[in-house]
Structures are given as C-alpha cells and as structure tokens.
Length: 546
Image (cartoon, rainbow, N blue to C red; front, side, top):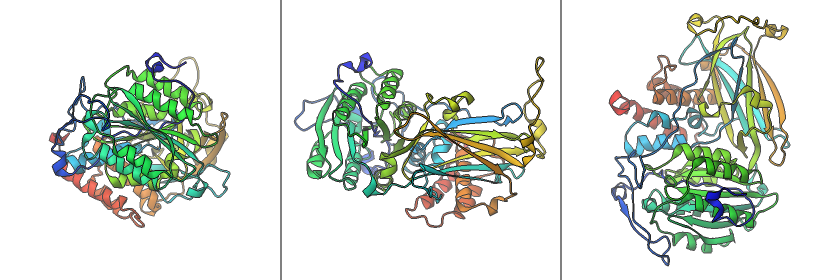
C-alpha cells in the first residue's frame, strides 16, 4: 500500500525513477541578475503564483516558504582507526557526482569557496573517468584493480586505491528504456541555468535514444500533471514541442508529482528493459506532504519492483542536497548536478549507458587489515556510506549500484607499523573478561589486507562474493600509475576544501603539480578544468571566505 501522502496521486503498478534536479548551471551573467519569474506552467494552463530565485551572489539564501538556503548533510571526517581494535572496514560504493559540480559552481559561478559540508570527497574523485581496464569476461559485471603506493601528503604513510570498472555496454546493446521525466516547474525554475538548461539537455538525450525507447513528461508545481504520456523517442518533435511549452510558476508539491511519475512509469513498464524516472528540480519539496522519511520508504518499496532513480540537480539557493542524495540512494540510482550544457552532455550523452543501465546492485566492500603490517587506517570520504560489519553478509541491506562503464574509486590512508607517530593514536584499554585475539598464521604472509566485495546481478536477490589480497611492493608515489596519482590529487583537493586535519603539509600547489602530471589523454578537458578550479580555490581560500 502506498503511503498516505501519495495515495491521492497514485493509481497503478511500478517502475524506475530518474530524479533530475534543477539548480546548477552557469547562467548568462546578465540573465543571472534577474530574480523574479512569473508564468503559467503551460501556455494553456491556469496561472500560478510567482516564485523568487536567489540572486547569483547569495547562493545560500532561502527562496520560498520556510526555506533557509541549500541544505547539506553534516559530514564528520573519518578518523584513523587502530587495526587491533577495528580490523574490518565496511562501506557501500557510490557513483554520485553531484558534489563535484556543486563545488565547480561555487568557484566558477559565484567566485567563493564551497561550504565544507557540500564537499563529499568520494564524489569529487568519482566525477572523472579513469583508464581502468573493464572485465575481460563479458559475464562479469566489473573488474577490480587494487594498488598501494606512498602517500603524497605524509611520506610515512601509504595510500591504498581500490578501483572498480563496470562492463561497457555499447549503444546498440543497450536494452529498451521506459523513461519518465518528472519536472519541477515551480517559480524558481525560470532562470537560464534551470528549466531552459533542462530543455536543452533533454534534446541531447533524445538524439541518443531510438524507436525502442519511450519518454513521458510529468510536471509538478502547486499540483502535478501529465503533460505527455509515454511516447516513442523517435517522435522527437512531439516530445520537444511538449517540453518547450513548459514554463515556470507556482510552488513545489514534489510528493504528488513523485507518485504520478511512478504511476506513469508502471503503466508502461518494459520487462527486461530500463525503467527509470528523471525528476528535475532546483529545490526542496516545499508544498504538500513532504516528509523525507515517507518519500524514502515509498521509493525504496518501488525500487524492489525494478524502478531505478537518478537525481539531477540544477541551480542554487533552495537545493535540499541532503534529501536528494538520500532519495537517489533508496531508488537504486545516482545523483548528478547539471550546471552547464557540457555537464548535461557528459551525463546524458557520453555516460548514457552508465546513467541508464545498471550492471550490479547492492555493491559492498569490506577490507580486513593485517595487524602485522598495518597499524591504523582511515577511509577517505564515503562518510555517509559506512556500513556495520554485519551488513556485509546481509543481503537485505541496501548498498550502491554500478552502471555500465562506470568507474568507482576508493582510497584508504594507512599507517604502517614502523611509522614514527604510531604511539599518538588513541588506544582502547585492555579487556577485563577476555584476551585480545592472537595473530593467525596468515598474518605473516606479507599481505597488507584482503578486499572482499559483495554484489548482486540486477535480476538477482542473492549476492556473490569476491576476495582479493594485496601486498606492498614498496612503490613510491612518483612510480604509481597516472590514474592513482590523479585520484590522489583530487582527494587532496577535497581535503583542502574541507579544512581536513589529515592533509599534512600539502597545499593547492602540490595538488596542481600532481594533477598536472596526470592529465594526458584529457579527451573532454575535464582534468584541465580541474586545474583551473585548484588555482581559483587557492586564490579564494582564506578564513574570511569559509
């Protein structure tokens, strides 16, 4: 049964939802000065109330009833843990990239440092495509690449890189798609970097779809409505004509729109295909029953029947980043932030298969560290993806998904047993009622750790297990491969933005130097753009800017 807050709008079966969130994007400087937008949702629809958008130089200002600006989940940075007390580290993978685009918009569009809680380091690292080899066997959903080298910001420490590369699915091999765009047309969506940018992005997407794919348009503001029922993607002019008629106006009843979009998706469900809803919004669901817990429960239930969800964000001033990230996670989807037409092209064209086609779900990682080789460790980022150790073997516990061709990277900083400051780490008193376990024979193997992965194939509910040991070959940081070095530079940049206590004596110049050495084959110029961001952050970073 649907939650009470959705019963009025829901009428039948299930499907996959892609939330496209409006709120990022580089607006034209002149257009960005405009703050008020008033219009009909459709040219033929009744008028709605006027919405107000925050000025470009006030990116944290609230807009709309009860709004207090962009909302971010507080992040408590992972600390070092002693291996003798915490031998296992367990977390869910994450392919979201929204945080990187948000950081870019703070820096480039608003010439200011991002708020520390807006910086999720794993999303910065995973924004980039890495030259990891995909699986050789087409039956395997992903390949795993594990490496260790000296830590660049603390030479007594080492970095562990764990990388997954999803199986590549070519366009002609992609299964048919049933897509429902759920579009926020409230008053604040009128800026050029919101609804107009979304329209351009949809046009790019339609060029990649074919006659086996279908697209529907659902809108919501003060109320929800079906603008275009599921239509073959080959009817591009019909779809774009309906899309181009949309105008912004009114407040935001997201709950009702969510229910209607799921209903439309269910009505046109494609067995064996991709069923997904794309929700497009620049802010919070600020009208109607909007409890996050209710929506999370509803979306989680829908995802069990083959409905996946992707969130794309546009604009600043009203974006509930924390809620949108949670929603995408519960919906077996991903969360990206569209701040430019180039970002729309990256997500909806270049990474189309990864955005639409899930190749492995509920992917969990668990690392067992060897106390004979590693004194302590800390996971860099993934703070809100941590799992209880018992969750690893529990197939009912939800985790992240990998899309076709996606690359996922995680970094651990470890302290070897011979590091000089080992004694400064916090300790736990000796136990009164039991003795500490003695090292097993395997502790003398020279292995640093054993990586265990659990994942489910998209149509299965029982997980599969992989185990991979790692030895230290004494690799210096300069000897590490290019992708290792670039990912490390991005992680270091994230730590600087967050004011991390673990960044050592590293500075923006160090980040720039390392990243510069790893920008070869920068096909779309994203790594070059990253270098620009580093220099701009360096010029802006001061206590008064935080």
